[in-house]
Image (cartoon, rainbow, N blue to C red; front, side):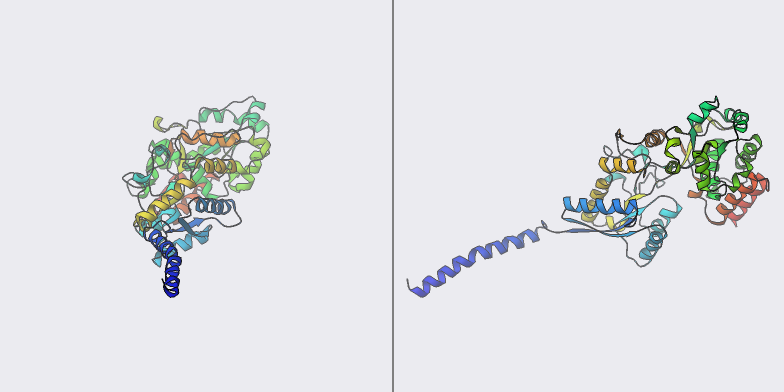
Length: 432
């Protein structure tokens, strides 16, 4: 063999492995092994609050464990988030995965854009407890996986130690609360404190449970907004009149219309009230020493309530993360988004949210509450797991009618208007 032929042969042998290796790389790319699936996401939070910090940590951890999935996210908080949702939908820039809900504020933009997608058939019933996820659609659809069981808005915080000091015990009926008035007055304290200066508190934290109890229909408010019931129906007028009854009986003070949210919790923390009415989240504003002797309960039996709603608590569906109809179009994107949702709702992450006080009760099947969680958080889990829910008024009633109702209840409490007058005003604003 000539020197020239030998040199050519050596060059061919040297180049051959490179060609084979390059060909292997091409084949791997062609079969999708190294393809990255992008999930265009709208996350809720910012870099300075717990929601945003937790979101960033979870996304980074998930991507590290799933290098073929890119959670390409935009993180916004509060009003900025809502405005951007509307803007993106209007521009046709629909995310694959987003923070959303089932009530008027959190669901409307997605519903109007036909972007709600039913997750139910894709969620593992051995992983999620469907009994803790309320139906979001008329046929039992689940449009997002809620961060927690429904938000409980009408709980009573009860200072068990203060009750004991006055020789009192947990009330079973409204009449039991009325019987506490003399002892409370003698001690210079209120029976029930409410932030009556905040109009929304009357609707969300008080009237929502009363109308559910007296009507016997957990969906009475939703039906009223839909036109099946009227806010001038006697049962709603009677519910409003409970404010007058409680003020006259001394269970609530007419001066509560001057008390704001912070003062309400301060009064309770400083033992100026036996009970405070608010949503479950208010536990975070109660002083630790008093929180240690606090029990969260449903309102006791009210006069005229129906048996089927005994012990009920008004509760609004929780927000959470959901795949949009756009995101569900591509099976690869859909499955990647669902995989992230499952990761986001893992036992470990739900445990941490309980410790942080960020949720009531996870929607996981057979969730185990860790021992190091605060007692008040454990109480929330128990209440949520045994919840008899009713509509939260402002989840269905909005705008001028809801504003009139909230302001009207303040007027009723201070003796400036009657229940009938406020009911008539709300109904008129709703229908006109």
